[in-house]
Image 1 (cartoon, rainbow, N blue to C red):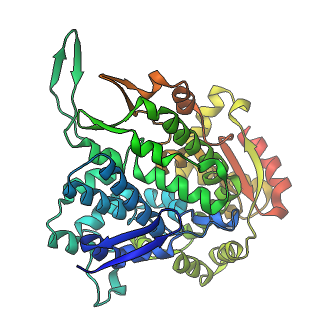
Image 2 (tube, one colour; image 1 turned 90 degrees about the horizontal axis):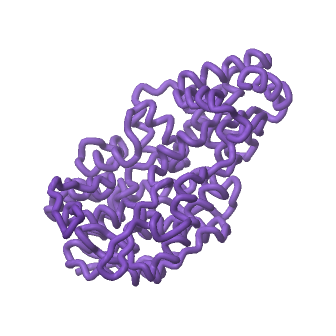
Length: 430
């Protein structure tokens, strides 16, 4: 059987053969080679040029390692490798940068897009189709892979059973016997997070992402069909979840990164697109080229991104500065139309064009791009007892309530307008 060895910067040599090798060579997977893992993060961390393809290869490897550490059957380990490889195939250009806008326009997030690519109901190759290479769904059919199980693993949809068994004086809930497969791909302790923390920490140079992967591997358990961790692995789990929280603060929701993401999303809205699904056929370079080859505002933003001439912070509102009523008012701006209305009001008051005022509500983006962020629901095995992580670790509750950013609203504008926009924004928002 033919195989290839890929030399990965994080995990070393990784072997691909059979179905995983065929999937790796599909156009859907290779598009990820042109999509940066951290979107516009390279504007702040110059080394952050690694791609979604690298990450997908890493997740496939980590999922396989987890499967082997648990002594799972070969067919289940192979399924984990495939799900890890495919889990991000539905990402738009610049990764999470356009997530909110595209969710507004299509009603789907990147995980739902991924499942439709797996089903073959969405085509992200289209007119760029080449004679060489099969599509993802064709290869899955060829190998008779369960698409339903793959989709559950990627969406993190654990199955529930209604039976509750009485054990002594307690009633014990038992889940679906294969939930651990789903947990390994999309859960509070999954291959995705392990790889992106290790990889993003390495490429950004931010040390917060360091985690004890070997310790986690050696303390994994399966009980009642769920992935759990032995009590001896709790310090490593604490380290991983703390690393995740710190990386979101220091890297993923860095305010300069958020401003760049706001700019590119706003520019894309100004382009007349009949079919927003077409964005999923692009990689980063093609999207930036689309903006630069347009006219007016989209072209200006494309050039600003190219040459790192970003908007500047005009106003930040922090949670501790807000009353509960004001915080509820700000939450209403989760709605894109309402947010654009306030942006126009601030711009008109400042005497500048409306698209030169951008408002960021980071919590909504965090909820959409990383729904696992506040979850610490890993179960801990101590002999015959099973406890929740929150019962055995004081970190759990703190991590659940901790926000990844210290502001609840940010207003950005070009440098030359900062002072007048700040005054207008304070008057209108505060």
